[in-house]
Length: 87
Image 1 (cartoon, rainbow, N blue to C red):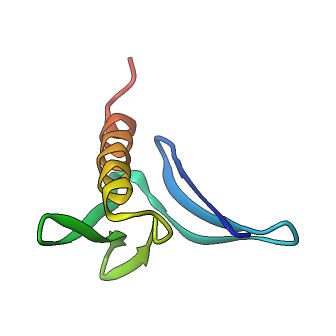
Image 2: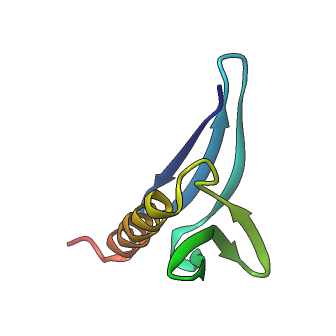
């Protein structure tokens, strides 16, 4: 069983893949410059990626198209919120 964790902070977006035996960071980028790329086909989200400077990492591959679309909205919102200045 593999788990994918996506952490968004004001400094970085990090994707970690874990199994009971190992954990590996597969993506890390500055929040300010990270983009969310969504590919749709017939109004279904078929691919979701994080992008930075020509590099991309697929995320949420195990989710259904509907779940992936919801996750994309939540991820975009989390990145937008993390970019806001704190006073």
